Image (cartoon, rainbow, N blue to C red; front, side, top):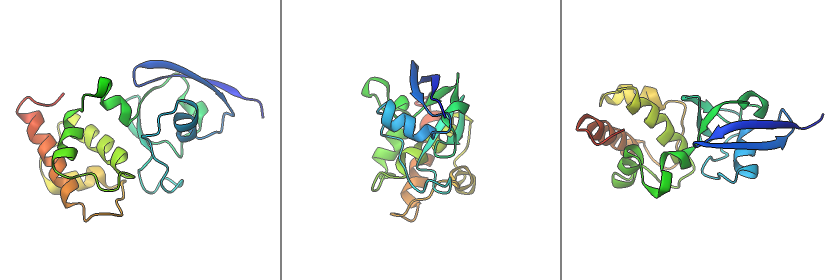
Length: 161
């Protein structure tokens, strides 16, 4: 199978990589673009560690063939902190201990980002539903929920994007 030249926009920057069309987007992001914030977890789309935004929608990059990302706008966890400035969701995770070992954190933060940007409220059941595709093996999710509630509050008070 011949290589495909993937052209897409990643974290606001035009990028391209030559790769087999069925290579996972996760591998292209990590190996070709050196964006290692996106984590390999299960490789089966069950844990959420590899979550990215593709055209604003949450996606599991371990299940997306690179050729399907052609022309897409992709946001990785690195794209939420341009020039090292943490976004409100990231700041809330930092302040409230929502990050444990760090494997699930990028996917959790991106799922929370979609929820908060979408106007999600502080209802714990709604937050759990928004994060349900992301597994954490280190915690009982309490601090993650507290982090998302804090991000919702920051947005409501004008501190969020």
